[in-house]
Image (cartoon, rainbow, N blue to C red; front, side, top):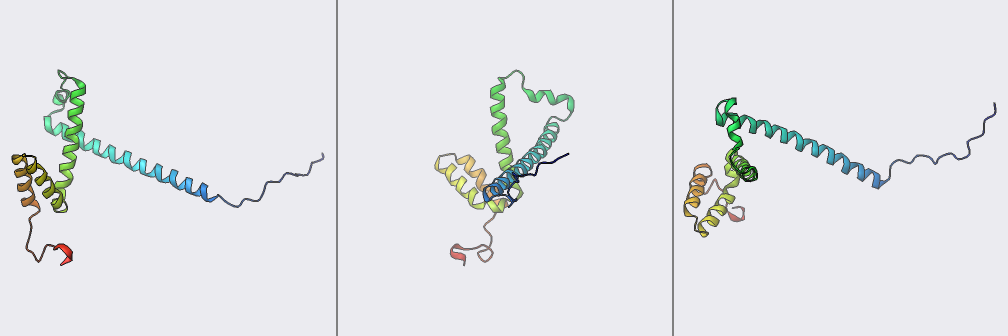
Length: 144
């Protein structure tokens, strides 16, 4: 048996190009971050399912949360706004001191728009969870 010598040998492998390395980094980051988002979403879904049962008290009452006598599109819109509001409030409640400036800004915006009752609620919550403190304990403008 005769063999033909290999004449079209490939060029030696120099490794991936800079573009290929960057593309791989993007694809890898995308996959990892998408996985984290999905895992976080599943975690939040579990918390929401738990909260739904806690609100109605018993599993046989869960269908009452469907509001079947209402337009499903309207119920979905309300659900999405309520969920966003609840998550926003929950984040602030865990460390309200970090949101002192935001709460002041929101309070002023509400007051300017003549939503005085709501502005008062924000003011009260801000004072309870993020008080001004003694001037020595609070950083002053300019870092002094």
